[in-house]
Length: 635
Image 1 (tube, rainbow, N blue to C red):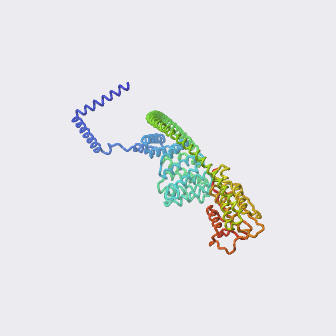
Image 2 (cartoon, rainbow, N blue to C red):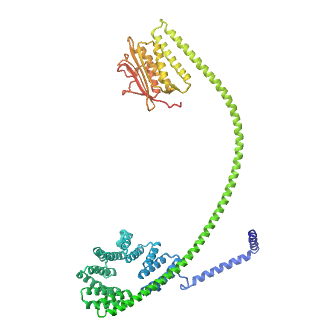
Image 3 (cartoon, one colour):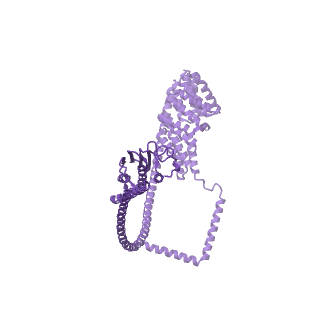
């Protein structure tokens, strides 16, 4: 069925295309007509009067809020609550943040006046959640929440929210005189209820000092509240002038509500002084003002005062008080029921809307998930197709490469076989050469030994022959050690030095000279072993020839030690006659000493005595001592 519908749609599109292709002139006429209609509509829109045009999106909410405030001032709280809630709903529809905030604030105030503190608190916190960037607006909400907690008896919470106003305004708090006056007054009244009269007076004085206008509402409230503190403390002489000043300002500015409160205060004041006639006059004035202002709460307060002051008519005032209180309680109950009904109905609608939105969101989420899965499936299909194609291509390449490798492997096997045959030939040749080298060196050494037995040679020729014999011995020992140890990289120095020293001693025939050889068992590579062997050879040759002339006995020490830090310490010394004290080493032409110096330099060694200027230390005999770093071996 779906395929059939797709075919129909395709046919329709094709038909439209053919129609437009054949009727281009008709299409042009339709386009021209559409342009003319659009122009006429635009001109009509421009010609409309301001009253005919639609209002901005927040105007309806604004008109509803104005009505709500009007009914609130007229103490028609049911109507005020209805219009405030309608304003809130309208602002929510148009997403008018200011309208939502203002509506919630009115609702919170109405709930507060109806003593419905939980609802007032809820609406105040809802208002606080909206993005309000004006510090004064946030300060008023903090103040409202603080007053709600205060009336609930939660003084500590109220105090915290009042203090938030001060921290919100920051260092520039003095710029917000209106807000700070409200803050100081409320803090003073709260401290009065907390029985901290001294602190309360400080806050009221802060309002008085802050106000430049000494006839303003905030100033009047502050001096009146200060008078209340003195009245509470029974400091009547301090309270009276403040009460008089507040009443004069209120009468001058025609503040009917403030005059009523001052008259009530004077009635209480004179009643406390037992001047009931004056108290009665002020109480009656307060009652008249409250009735004129249409303020039921103030009427109740004045009736309560009159009941105490006018004892003759106390029953009449008491009955009026009870009747009015019942009326107010009925109105408050009616208001609470209506507001609860409105909230319930609105909540039901909001829940239904939220449920529908949730269903739509869930459907959208499911659709997104399905589309996501489809897109992933299609993507994976393309990826797998591409990968499969790539794998097949790689497989073909690997097969061809494998064939080439097999061919190369066969060639390598043939080459390896040839190399093995060559290696066997070279090894045999190498063994033969070493064997011939050892035999020849041994024969040469024996021939030199026979020559040395000839008494006709002079001393110089004997020395040369012994030196050559020592060199041959050194080379032969290295070759033998490599052969027997089976290692072509390293030489055991203990065995090498001991055999070399004994051979040289034997060549020179110095049996009366004691030779002490103390060498650690360690290995050196070929280069370092040959260099160290050459140094020992040259030193012993020179020592046996020159150090012990006409001496019945002597002593030669060979000490070679391996340190923990891969360093080798070498000390060669004898107790012979030593070198001349006035010998100039710079002009020295002795071949043996030059060779020793060159091999020490080749080892990159450091002389082991403070004066490194000279090669030998000649304090007692002749001594050479140096340290060099051992090469790393791969044994």
